[in-house]
Image: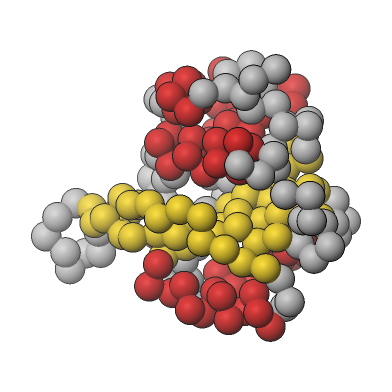
Length: 216
């Protein structure tokens, strides 16, 4: 069966209820339907990393990435978040789009996820993590966690300005990393900014796990 087209996927993800009061300390940045659709459609159409696969969404927020993966035919989606309100919202959003039977959402600190989930339990991990601006180094910790969970690939949304740091870590871990798209992310503005939000250049990076990518 042909994969869902990009526009149809984006339309299906529009109007997903988002976290009403994002917690700045958790860097809860809403992933728009456009960005979520682009990330997931690329992962499926170009790399075959979604359909029939077990997919994890670290820091799932409103569940948009998990829901989108389910709509693209993922066998199983698991969302993890430290915020109870985000988990409740993800469950509601998944139920509203009739994919809750494909998804589980778990309340936990993703940095300690090994207490809840066995390593290498997923084919693909997708995440829009904290960018490490509030808690320095949190982004790298979560990337290492994602790589420990995946057997196939990890997709990461991250600020383009920190690309060198991310690529350096990938090299140290002997993981192939490639920027496969550049996107504009609408972030809530810092209190010193006059505007309500700021556009930030973001990379979509795919990390291919060793020895499991030769057929792509």
